[in-house]
Length: 601
Image (cartoon, rainbow, N blue to C red; front, side, top):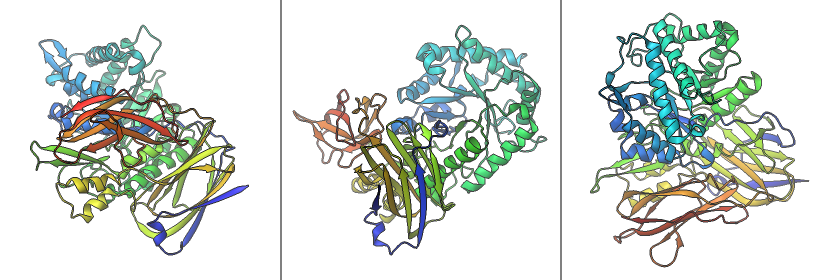
């Protein structure tokens, strides 16, 4: 039996009858390749010469903490340029204090570095070093051993290491390496990684050359390294990384990636078995360039579209493994470009308070990384009737997910469109939810603009902006009374939808852990927690509670499925008391509370 559910939000239903109808058919009885979440990464570059100041700032720490607060490790690694510049020298010894602080903070936030072996302490290394291989072997081994001792091999072996970023560009190749010197550097890094774990069976993964790969004449280092790898038995790289961007178009980005892959596999056929990584797979170059589409759901839809098309075109059709597909969008914006730069979050530096403080807001592109984290298990068969629709679906024994993207590059269309999504062969006794990201219900940028785009949004406006910063739950949790469902969505462009269903046999949630309470300003805190032990993706909400006296009360008025909540106590009373958090699933079953944390301003 097919059960039809017609879904229309209050805002969307105000439009006239749909002018288009599209269909998607998803069959959960099929089981294709296992989905490895190759998109769980971001990156950014601190200003050269200000690496310490930038990465150790409170704003940077908050930015990283919020990136780590996506559910299900929606982003699990950050690629940061010039990390090795954080190391200083004391006479002939390396001083790792600042690098320790940065990596400790990432580790505390359940994030891993995509560790570029880029930079050097106090300009210690120059072309005057007689043996490039020996230097980089020693430097790499010493550095990596330190963090194996600090965090354990089980942690460091999950990191990805990478060679120097874009070595053919003068702005990065500050050592002015020749091709032979560059090859010596790469072999030195490989040797150092191997020596760091020589008593174990682990192999630390090294990728490269992280180049833009223009013609051989102008980019000899990157092409020369691949040419060498094609001709020897033991290539020092475990994945081939490159940078291709979309010139403002998601379709153009995918096309450029495919052209590059086809060309280099034809030229170097012995490298076809090595996984690939576009770790700066951005829609448009220049992170600081102001583009309005970067502010709202258009950017979120484009990122999801690029991920889905890479899965279909690279993994499914070409059989090429993807190590990572990363957006270089972990930057922090600056005034007056609060939403429109290539960032995950909007940052407002509130210099009108004493002392000044900073407010962060989720952009839709951050939220879409949370929705993508619900894809798990094996992909299943999908048939669709429109090129404007991109979709990917997955299943495990007890969960069923589908992510649907409706977009046409950076265009927006508020006319009503109907999409009929047929889900076949769900398991019995399921509950399901539907979330959306669109420009009507999840658009803090629009809320801010409507208020006059103030440089310093006040308390009331901040609350209104945050009320639209999470994915909007359109429906559920509802019971599926059949193993076959037809869901009719009336939507606008651009939109991203997640349908997520769970079987009743799934276990109740476990405890939330690692609750942090970070001061924002007087009477305002940012709470962040972890879901490692929750062990369930079927979470309706996290309940955040506060106790100022003898009794806990819930303080999050709306349900939240991400791992953070910002709380501002009204009035002038000092914020002092205990916080705790628990997970509640689709069946209203509560997990254990986190350990309570006491806070006093």
